[in-house]
Image (tube, rainbow, N blue to C red; front, side):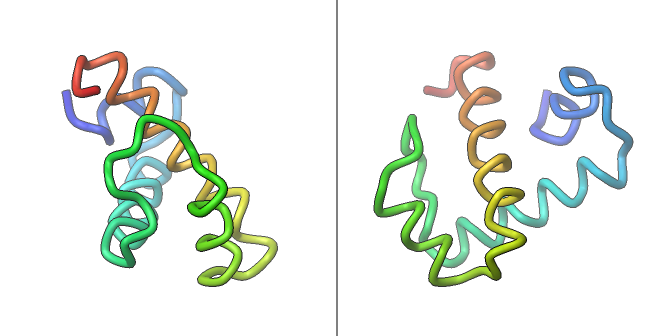
Length: 77
């Protein structure tokens, strides 16, 4: 099961919403903010604050949180 499928099943969200999570995750990874940590770190939060608008940070933080949960549930951490 990939991240998008996990989101749709676990959180009962539609495919478009799951794609938005994937897009946010890819952006976070491409910018080097998230590099496979098993929890959100203070430096990660600081980087989110530098890179994204204040009203978007909660969505990016939630994306990381849900990706970490996905990794733990699928045994990737």
